[in-house]
Image 1 (cartoon, rainbow, N blue to C red):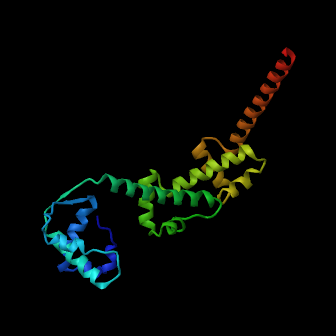
Image 2 (cartoon, rainbow, N blue to C red; image 1 turned 180 degrees about the horizontal axis):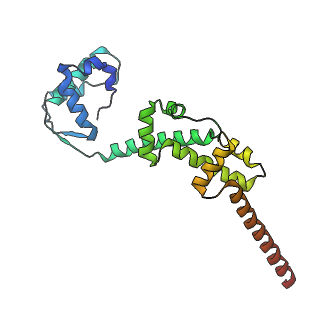
Image 3 (cartoon, rainbow, N blue to C red; image 1 turned 60 degrees about the vertical axis):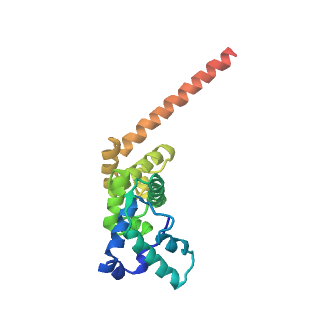
Length: 216
């Protein structure tokens, strides 16, 4: 197995006519390439000379090897291990993005700000995000802000205006509208319903505790 950075050779060189056969072979190799090479093949001469060094002779040897391989017949594979590694890299990128969003909900987050965490262009990041999360960046951001606000409504006595600001909504009216679009009730209604539930549970536990003490 050989692994190296193709762009280190320079884009002009990669796009040259002389490199076209090698470039095509490398593009096909993304799915894995199986070469059946005889032991006495001249390809093995180049393979045996491959070393992990920075000597210029290694560059020449590598190019000779690639040219030799581009002239060999090969079979394309579905490389299971490659799929796993690639999937892991995607998961790592998704994890970085989701953590950054979670840690900065109160900030005026934009596609550009989050895309910068992965060194992606805005359009590339938007496609990446939608492909892996199933929603747009904006949809996900609104939902996460609303979910966090719902937790604050139940666990704190903060005002609704403060909670909206804490999770990044620019105005109370915007917070109310977005909250209702996700949870189907207003923040005030949500807090009231959960406070009633907590009161009922606390009363129920108190009654049960009293009965248990009387029967003990």
